[in-house]
Image (tube, rainbow, N blue to C red; front, side, top):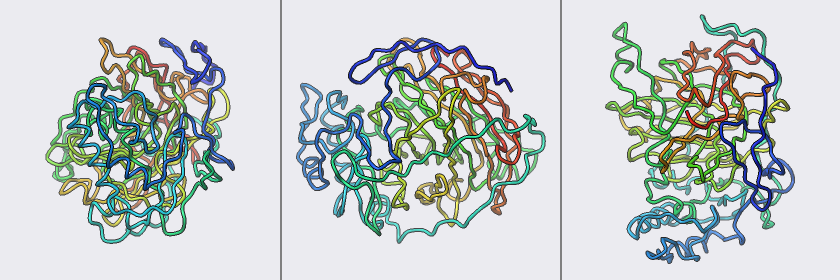
Length: 499
């Protein structure tokens, strides 16, 4: 592995309010005064957040009376509820707006909120754990019990490149907000309540339709990469479902990823925290690092996903945020991010989806990371982040599909979406913006990768070679075995541009 410093080229900077950075096929580096949301200290400041804090009851009342203005495509100002700022509404027509409005009112019908607070541009409402949208809308009877403690495997998988010793030491990021927000509200929820990110018309109306808001990416982009399944060598392989699927063709989304087809109940990966800049005027949409656990029903992809994402159109800023996503039917009519459709059951009262990260890794300097684990337990897909059980997707979401009981494919890597609405496909940086081949401490990485078998034994995976569908703008290194600390790991990413 090369530890040589890569040649870095600074993005051109335009200083001033809301600093912007531009580049063509250059590396991402820190440029000027980049404002980061500090969430581990005693006070959290909103970045481009709402000018006024909107209490929950006022938000619901405003949503109920909001009006769509056809001549401008805008929503009346009374609809503001805390979220992505106004001024760039894209909702396509009155019927789409009404569908959005009804969706929000259904999410919160009859809910009592005891306290609310803001973290960055996102407002969180504290509600009784059994009143949250996922419990009410899905007809769940009580909250599931968390999985028991588990351990990582002690050795690497056969055939994995030795990779030498572990590349280096990183610090685990602190992502549990505390203190007070910029409006003076205490950050956190009272006992027996959980924080649920508020879904608002301001957020939704950045998209033309409700389905566009709920989708993984615009125009159906952002789907899980599905490699061709190996030819079954036995009846057991066929019964596991490895013989019945044709992978989708990636269009306007690009990947660096590795995978294993294996019957599994989830697993772990530790992700480096990076802050690639997504420049939306060039058609760049999002950049992420994540894990996918995948199954199928009648040939349609089912997933639970989680990771770190920079997505200005959805999240309203240029910071990496913790996210979860699911689909039960190949990203067709089911699925959403975080709390957007009442699917994810929030369990933790202190750690929640949508939270931003600070500090982030510095290319060539200090590295920060976050362990993320999915585990199917007693019928539900539980998400653990840095040792805290955040919540779960009920297995009932997946009907009679694989993911109701297990996964058959585990994937790990990065994803880009770009080029939407343009005559060319131009992509944002991936990971740190440095080539994956540059390794530690320059490139983004995932490490400590392992999975659960059907009896909850933990195993280092026999991962595929890295798949790179953007060779002109990214590169990879690994997967390799890095000893008992790093375990299975790989580096990935690059400056993006034309792929």
